[in-house]
Image 1 (tube, one colour):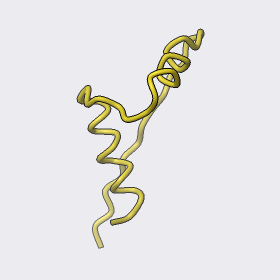
Image 2: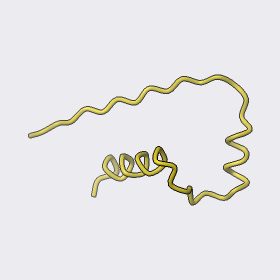
Image 3: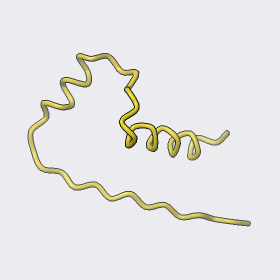
Image 4: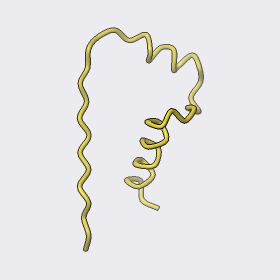
Length: 48
């Protein structure tokens, strides 16, 4: 499968509160980052 599909599946799992496989220390470092960020995700379905 292509990396785009794999990334979509991973994003859906993470959004659904599926437990991450990363080390707990890394997850703690990410959670401790201060600041206000805004992310937008775009999905374009292309059908041949």
